[in-house]
Image (cartoon, rainbow, N blue to C red; front, side, top):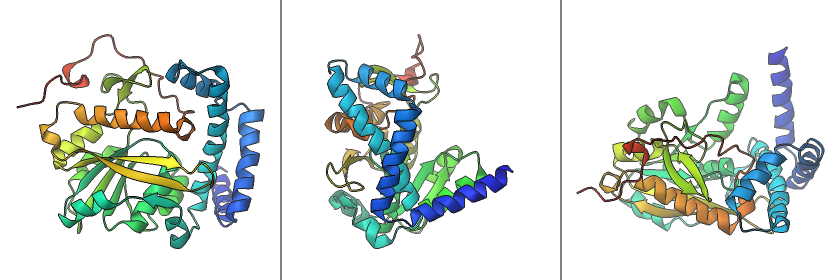
Length: 304
């Protein structure tokens, strides 16, 4: 029965993906009303996250951010479904991307590690990158429990040549030989196990950060870029993305310095467009341990 339900759902999602953008966003508006206004989906989580992140904002401003976020959240869901049937031409028209930095390193045949947060439609951006850039795009992702859904989404993510790497294989796949330079992309602003995380202050709160991105960058000894995404305030489904250099020499950076730079840049982007981040995620569900080990702290001085 479960497998039958999955097959029916996948057929439905595929049919929805063929709708026009106008009809797609109509469905998004209806879905927003159902899950946020009727079922109150994670509204308390969103409100608490916003209040703790922006303690100086008044309730009217916080509510305005929340209302915009509700629409952005359901837009991302339906935009991601649309990726199943989107044409390459349509996809390429939806991002404004500055590629000068990438061209600079591609000419040197350098691999790059790219760190990012859940800004805008990260799924659409990953697909866009594989359609637009000469690099091999390698994206680390969390596998779904349902294999049929996982295969359906994996087919979407790889339709223009991206390589998907399960989180558990990230370190092995990072050093695998490839025919051309690659971007190793990690969206790592979720909630890691507190005993393993790097701990910093992010959006006014004690925040744990996955350390894997920095460890992989050191292992590859590759330049590290931060990838930011801003949503077009007027046209739904359109974005602007950019890359910012964190370091060219990861092994010369202080311990957790790469992660600290990433979180600083991510916070700047969130403050610029606060409704554009994933506020419904239980980002701060873990408490900071009372005692942190050395590898969980920001090194105070650069290594010699």
